[in-house]
Image (cartoon, rainbow, N blue to C red; front, top):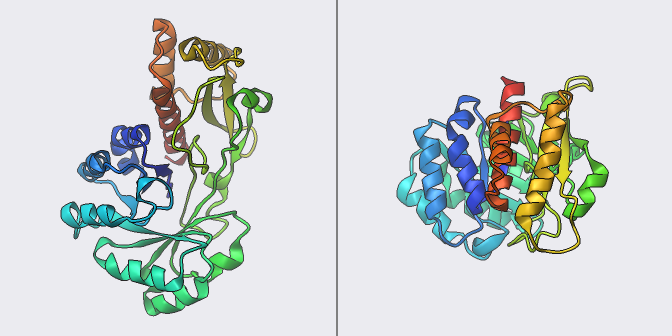
Length: 313
């Protein structure tokens, strides 16, 4: 069903670990692209998923981060701790610079890890579908693309197909206030109509990868909601600090953004689901506590997952 795509930074992995029971209960399958050299956090995350009886897809040939040139250590982690475990699938990332021979070789090397193909710009779909042959119907394909790319996906008719679309528009934090709320996605409503077995997104982080966030001239809290008065389309609020002219005082800026969130909630018309993450935002407001920007991002990701879990039942 839902396949959230995470780049494996610290707070992304913490989010998955903390949400592992809910992810498993709702049959949500996180896709994890490891980006940090150390794989200890990833290993703990995969163990948490398995203990919750959940599933995950781990990209074994990442494009971004420390493993972009060589995913051998990721493969070794799966081989050493998760071989034969059908809960953990090896994700084979197929980008525009991936040849058919590369895709075939990666598939052959990870047959013991129930491989999933993750299409993100690959240019030889016909060759891959032909190679899979009769096994196509038993294969799983994740398409990181526009819902309009139907001709490409047609090559893999008969397989299990998942469509991942980035609904988060990346901007400078200070610019989000002009676009709040804005449409995030309708894929959670329409994926079945598109012939997909599931859907995914990049949560409130987006598909644009960066090593660090840089100085916070403005602090923004991004929270999604489903508008039941608008065909259940998902929208996203951006609660942005008033101060945005210097890279100092992130705690004060967070307090400004949090004040705006709480005022919105207290109107009773926000349409934000009262998730455990929202409850924690309320507690932070009451305590006047700043937990750090990474923690704030974690809460927003948790809220997004909880919102979709409630909607999809």
